[in-house]
Image (cartoon, rainbow, N blue to C red; front, top):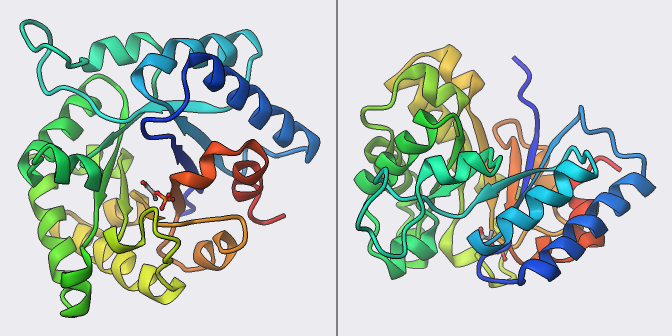
Length: 258
Ligand code: PEP
């Protein structure tokens, strides 16, 4: 089974809609300059909600092969949920991926594994691919308990999701101590946990599902370290924060094989 690498740029709460247009156009131009082969990797940008319509317009009018995602989704379909955005609203805008359970949402919005799992289900039901985030803090890492911590998050988030849906999904392992800090987990650290996640999916479901699910690493990924991380057998891509805000840098990450 060959899994298509996925390089996804999480813009977080950065860039207004005009800046978003400039970044997507810049990224497309950089990738065009290096004759990027879109059949060899999926390239995804994940802007704030307010930029999605503008990104859609650029992608559609210029027929770009760059996909786009959202950073969160409501578990509700519609109604009195001030400030929330539904899955159907996002799918209507051509969104293909939804990040669920990013550590910043878990921390600042108290999102539990069960809520994260529900958001993944809502994304899947609306035909989009959830990027289910997990990862340990520094205290857990120092105690050497990263694998059990992450597997407990995975058990909680995948509960009630079918094998077919898990096979389509993406799991992103992001050690919190490496996010936005410049501190990168070693390729071996990334492999240890990504490999354990795949084994856990095999245990919870079956080998075929485990072989199909894409597992990303995230945490201070840059063009200078992406290739060695991507060389690990259970790392299928990267979820990139800061470095995805620069067209030339993110294009180099997407083109990690050079
Ligand atoms: C992230 O927030 O998903 C992330 C990996 O950020 P950074 O690349 O900036 O560490």
